[in-house]
Length: 335
Ligand code: NAI
Ligand code: MG
Image 1 (cartoon, rainbow, N blue to C red):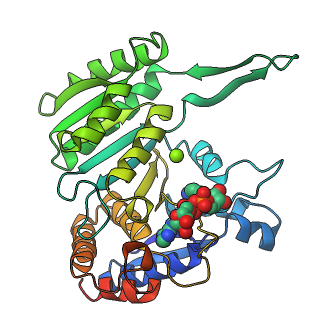
Image 2: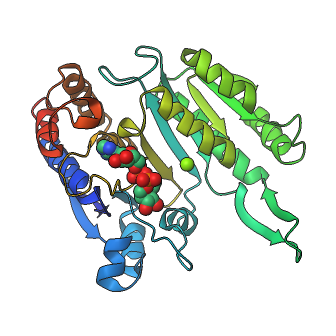
């Protein structure tokens, strides 16, 4: 049976890294078929809107999408398309692995192999109750945490740990100060943890967690946390392993999942053919895992590591002189 996925080529370097990624997926012979859909600037130019209904329908139908970065035009009336997609499909789990790769600018060449699982729909980003007083002196907003939202994200983290043979889940919170919201998250997490006696569970207050990540990142395995903390921590972790060029991310819900690179559309290098396709390729690897194509996903990651190790055709951001295409060809040749 052929699985169809929605492919969004995106803006800026998006089309370049997507073409390279699809070329590698084809070489992997995973038997996927692609349904192309537009979003972002490309969609605005073609269809007059950033997120056409046809694109939403395609994702709804296929349930899995691979997405290049999108440019959100600056100015009134344009809300972030990525946030919109998360809302539309209730993509509650943001899953971001951070792993040290050879010959990259990681501060910890051997030490880091962790996954941040961030709650993606509520918390400080619930966007509720945004108010500024009439005199402009006071601003308020609502941080909303629910038991349901907390339970499903913590459960997701434990299930992920179990499925991937990881040993430990660290619950990151600030329940000592944010007693109601972070308190409910922590209390719910403790209850869920009791169901997973095979996985070690510990708790860390978010500020201490940041220090520990910088000092001793090797102690972490899976981190689960609320929206705002997860946003910041996952970027910190990308920094630990050498930055954006190798950081993939998945947005996962019950009915749909969208896989992407963490970086943006890089307008400064768009059209030059030198963008690093690794982050999107690693996102495609997460997608293969999600589709149950675990062996192919492992093969893909191995080929990426071997190519980095050999310093074969690396793009300029990794210190090489390769192009997006030659780098992708070097990876495809090692599958
Ligand atoms: P950016 O991630 O696009 O670029 C930051 C720097 O990293 C630039 O110097 C860029 O050249 C470099 N870079 C990024 N990806 C690279 C790659 N694959 N290979 C080599 N170098 C790479 O962030 P920026 O400039 O803040 O945002 C540009 C646009 O991207 C904005 O319109 C923003 O809204 C959008 N964006 C979209 C995201 C998404 O769709 N998921 C995420 C972040 C930003
Ligand atoms: Mg962020």
